[in-house]
Image (cartoon, rainbow, N blue to C red; front, side, top):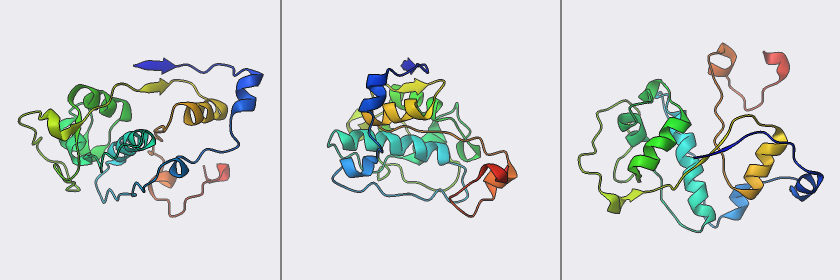
Length: 173
């Protein structure tokens, strides 16, 4: 586990940062957006999409990875009641992750269905980075030079739980 702390970027590093980064333009196939339904599994989908993009950037197709496995088996998380991408990454680092076709999404909590951790059908990760303190420039630096990231937003605020639009403004809070 590599931890990136916020650091002041040198003038040279800032100059080398692109104006924008859109990783969808860097892969030769589409990674579909998935619907979580009424299950609070956004943490699982965010984690898995980051891994799918990381593999795609290396020109390897993972297929859709199993959010249901994380919901059912990543016991340090809370299934459909929420979770933490870092805990999900730790689970995947230890156990690997099935593709969704082997462990399909059911939109609800379930009992872990992994009886023999079959490595032939599971996708591994070899580590991950955590950005503890960040700035817009640090996020751009990681996106441009390392790859996809997962960003979690705490949604206790009613405005975030009931949004109907993609855009938020400071005045909304």
